[in-house]
Image (cartoon, rainbow over all chains, first blue to last red):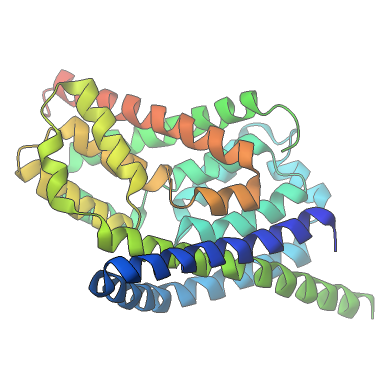
Length: 170
Length: 145
């Protein structure tokens, strides 16, 4: 197992241990709120499980189909406008919690995906197509359209800025 | 034979990756649940009313700390707007809710690198304030707000 992957695995379990310790401390201070938080966790875990299934499937497909050559062509340094377009649209269409997508992005990053496009993907996720009717209901159509337009434009700017700060491979 | 090998290798790699991310996801969900339960929504409305930019910064800060489904941010923002909080502040809150994640930062750093996670979140925070101001000013310019 590569050293980076080993570190990531250990870090993941350490992170879980820290959170569980936090729960333990919280339980000592406020048992009712902590029990409520745990009930909430079980509820969102049930909601997230199908998304995790989707993530597993996408990782599997990515491992089968996406070679470093293909990633370079569509999402690498030479991808150009096509790369920006793919990452913005993919971000808008992506579902589920953002942390489930970190693994997919990390996998694509290893295969040569541009840093800017990862940041753009993560930012354009702010446009939530299924939730647009609710946003229109609360804030109006004009507001929703203007906000979504700015979110798309700034997702690209965000990508450019992040890459400028991280010129080398992260 | 070669295709079968490729499929098997891909499956093994996927399972390995998945096992690596599981503790991060479970930890994230546990942390999010605790933050949402302990985060008092009521105190948020008393923090606003100090002008466009301070309100945008406050809204963006609350959105950065808060975690959970974006639906919750729309509901909270809608209620805050009804409660007299400015559109700039609630816009900044909704944008950072989905683009900045203090709670998710450890997971993002583990998967994509610490520097990437920190820079991306700082830039996203600044951009959320700009978007909030631009959105409301644009609507005012076109007479839609």
